[in-house]
Amino acid sequence: MNKDKLFLEIALEEAEHALVENTYPVGAILVDENNQIVAKGRNQVHSHHDATAHAEINAIQLAGKTVLDAKVHGKKLTLYSSLEPCLMCTGAILFANIKKVVWILNDDSGFGSFNKVKEAQLFEKKYNEIEIMEEPYDDLKIKQIELMKQWSMNSNHVDNLRK
Image 1: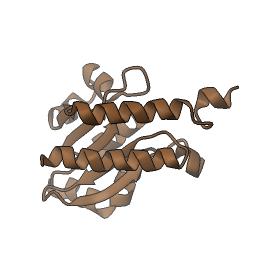
Image 2 (image 1 turned 60 degrees about the horizontal axis):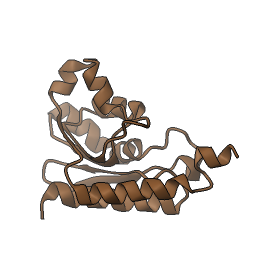
Image 3 (image 1 turned 45 degrees about the vertical axis):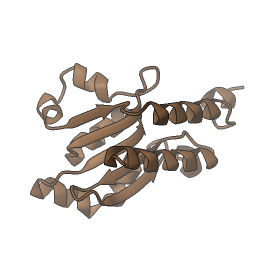
């Protein structure tokens, strides 16, 4: 099996866990250059009552020293996410010096910002160092879309909280 697809499937499993925990269904996996999983993260905004508890941030935090070591010694880390990273997570990815980012589903209508920041040519030098793969597998994209549909009916979804 293709390693990118395998890691995206694991990220999707984390997204499913997030939905079971009644929070936005996003999962992320951080992998080192030897294809070893360094950390798994999932959105925990509602379960932790923390607006910054996003999947990508969670994975980067859990990787701790490995991220700093990779940054200092030029090692390549790859972040796999079930959804295009938001502005906050994009900043964390850039600051963590992650060299490859792969996600299942673009988030044009939501807070997805990885491509928007790149298109604005902000941090252009950093972006030129990052390999980007977006929406590489239709079967996984369909699964993430289904999780998003399920989330829209969840009692913690902002539209439902406002009712």
